[in-house]
Length: 115
Image 1 (cartoon, helix red, strand yellow):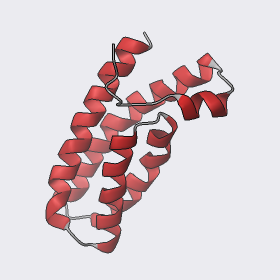
Image 2 (image 1 turned 180 degrees about the vertical axis):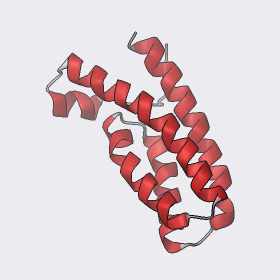
Image 3 (image 1 turned 135 degrees about the horizontal axis):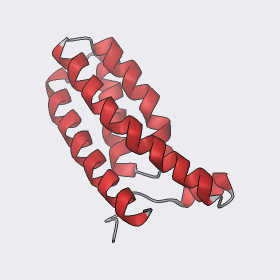
């Protein structure tokens, strides 16, 4: 399956020294944590708890960086920036929707490519 540039394992391969067990562990962790992030992000937004949204977004970015999901990383960085600055808040729902879509596509790609 062509991952459509959804992810790039170069960084993870480099830091793991090509350790396939470590790579699978990182991918599995991402697949467990990322959907939970979306649920929490939606809840924080609904509750107007923008500080918690910023913190939660900040926490997930390193894992996204590890799996080389550049598009998702860029969206998350915008969410974090807007939430921290409390600016462009009207854009947050659409950004979270985009993240949800990217996460779904990443999980499908990882499931296919690493099963």
